[in-house]
Length: 361
Image (cartoon, rainbow, N blue to C red; front, side, top):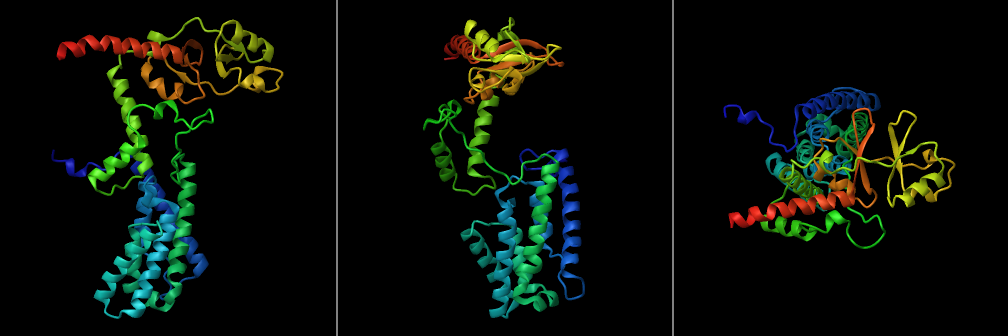
């Protein structure tokens, strides 16, 4: 209890993520200052690096998925707010009134331009109270150095996140039906609906620092994890088929097609000379011209025997995959789970739970 004040309150915050944020901020701020200095020169009346960039770096490197940390929020929010601050300072000469008015108008301007960025408030305040460097820059200050600093920082952040394999800018990929129809994919037809998320947000009547679509994605993952936990004793090794039909990577398309039709299966694992899984083919892949299946095989979905069976739901309901191959550490095939296998297991689990529910009632 004594250390609860030091526990991060951000969901998903880990030590690794925080260390990455520290490294990214160090590189980002240092290089932004260096590059800006080379572009603008130096001197007592040159604002090479403005203070709000430090706050922007916190968002950019520590919470890159936040709507407040996206490229337009950083560049637009800082630049527009600084322009508001300089404009207010030009017309209102009382620093106290000008400060409050600048921050208030900056919030309004960022809201209307969909570029809300907390450091923008500091940028607006800097435009009013920035001192000789800001006064000498005049209406150029929002663009050089504020916009210049912001663009350099976002560019460096983009490169850093790509190198560290983090998703930035944060883009929500909506659920899509792979069959090209208007229906939602299977995962979107059960449980809550998008309008339920909207109704919940309206009922709470609060603003959250998370994209509305990310809330929906998070809730669907929560549903999945709850189901996996409820059926955690059901493992892949309990329901997988063990007599798996596979095909070597140098097999012809006709040989693979014959195996699929003869065994009435939709997915055929492809193995190399050492019997290790290298991919999978179905009739869809075999419609393309090829000499061997190696030329048209797709990536195979895989899992270990100890994986909870219900965790395969996202893969087997994505509209593309019809089976998951169960492999060992060396990628040798141990079994295979199809959509039918998982459906039958789910039905059995539901039937087994029914008597317990009645007994409780």
